[in-house]
Length: 303
Image (tube, rainbow, N blue to C red):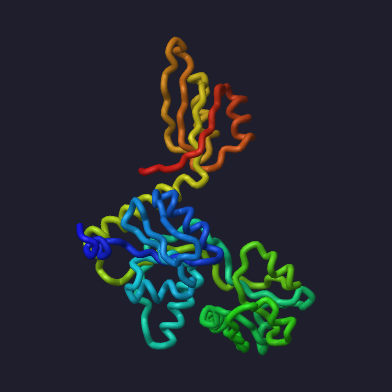
C-alpha cells in the first residue's frame, strides 16, 4: 500500500486536548489496544498498531470537525453535543454528526448554582435574574421549557466568579465533584443536563476498510466497558451449596461448574461477576461453604 492510499484508509479521531475527558479518552483507547506515538505538545498522535490517528483539539471544536468530515470520529461530552445541536437549530441548520455510543466516563451535570447565602424557592425565584453561562442554548431551552423569563449572560470562561463580580445573580456551569462551587461559595440548585462522554462519527459514508475498523473499535469499546467493575472469581465448594453460592455471586451469569478430581461432593466454581466483589461477598461465600477463593480483575471480554 502506498503512502497516499494508507493516509486515505486511516481513521482520524478528535479528542479533547486538555480537560476533563482527555485522560479517560486516552485510557479507553489504550485499553482498546491502541499504541499511540505522540511527542510532547504535539496535536497529532499516530496509531502504531491500528490505522487510527488522534487529533487533540478544543472540545467545542469536535462536533464541527466531525460533521465537516475533517475527522471521522470524535470523543466529546454530551453537553457539548447538545449545545451544538441547539446552536445549529437556532441558525436554521441541522447537526450532521451521528452519536455512535454513550460511554461510561466523563460523568458530570450542567447545573444552576448561586451564592450559598442566597435563598432559593424553586423555579419561580429565577424570574428576572441574570444567569451567567458558557452554555446559552442549553440554558435557554431549560428556561423556556419551564416558562421562566431570565436574562442569559454569555461568558467564555470563569463563570463561577460572575456573581462576585456583579455580572450575574446565578451561574449555569458544569459540575462534577462540586469543589469549584464550594471554593467560590456557591451552591447547586437545579440540574439542567446530565452529561457523559459520547463517541460520534462523520455523516460521510466511509470506505469499507475504514468502516470495518470503526466496527472493530466499537466492539473493543464494548468489551472494555463491560468489564469496568467485573471480576473473575474462582472457588471450591460443596455441590450442595451451589444454589446459595449462585445467589451470592454479584451480577454473574450462569457460572462454570467443574468436578474436583477425587472429591465427588465438591466442585470448582468459575464465574464472571459484573459487579464489584467486596470482602463482605467473600465472607458470605465462606459462610455457606466456599473455600480457596480467588478474585481476579478482568481486562477484556468479548461476548
